[in-house]
Amino acid sequence: MQNIIIFGAPGSGKGTYSDEIVARYDMGHISTGDVLRSEIKQGTELGKIAKGYIDNGQLIPDNLMIDILAKTYDAQPAGRGVIFDGFPRTIAQAEALKQMLAERHHNMGVMVELIVDEETLMARLLNRAKEQGRADDNEETIKKRFAVYHSQTEPLAKWFEAEGMRHTFTWEGSKEQMLSKIFNFLDTLK
Ligand code: AP5
Ligand code: MG
Image 1 (cartoon, rainbow, N blue to C red):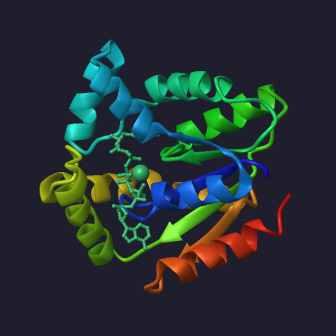
Image 2 (tube, rainbow, N blue to C red):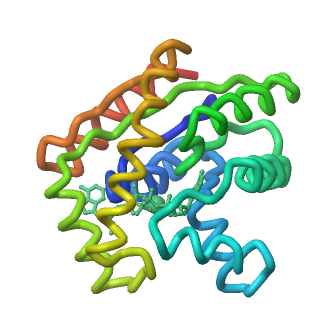
């Protein structure tokens, strides 16, 4: 399978569908949010910097994020596609990803965009707060994450469209339905 960029608002299912896609197509999975949470847990310098941004619902600065992405990508086993989950989130990150992959003679692949209404997103994240206790899953921070998504990340969808990579999937109330639409599309790719 080629590379996949999974794109969507907080709680849209990037992580959930990535796990299903990884299982079906045997791919690598890079979640920049998971990478940062692991750094925080280990108490690294990067983790200390990242915590301030994450707890406040803000994005980590592009230069830091681009550096982490390249290191994480190069640590993946060669020869199979990777799902990028939560990256890129700004135009600068998208341009950097394009350049990084071109330098390695790899393709960007396809972008899978998840569209879910905000009421459903909020309900999912508040529910996850009860189950997992992620530090940024509280109503105040979730609202900031939505605002950051609208102002800094959503405009990127047009960037992907211009690259001919954008494929949009809209939530209609059932996870199985969403998944089967995504799989039907991915099955047409190599
Ligand atoms: P990140 O970890 O990427 O968080 P996010 O974008 O806010 O998205 P989530 O992980 O909350 O949601 P998701 O779309 O993965 O949905 P999930 O599958 O979990 O980033 C966190 C922070 O790190 C950022 O705010 C930023 O500070 C920093 N960061 C990360 N990347 C960065 C970057 N590139 N640049 C700068 N900063 C960066 O689903 C949500 C819940 O819904 C789950 O509990 C799931 O089980 C549930 N659920 C219920 N029904 C469904 C259904 N039908 N489909 C899918 N999920 C469902
Ligand atoms: Mg996630």
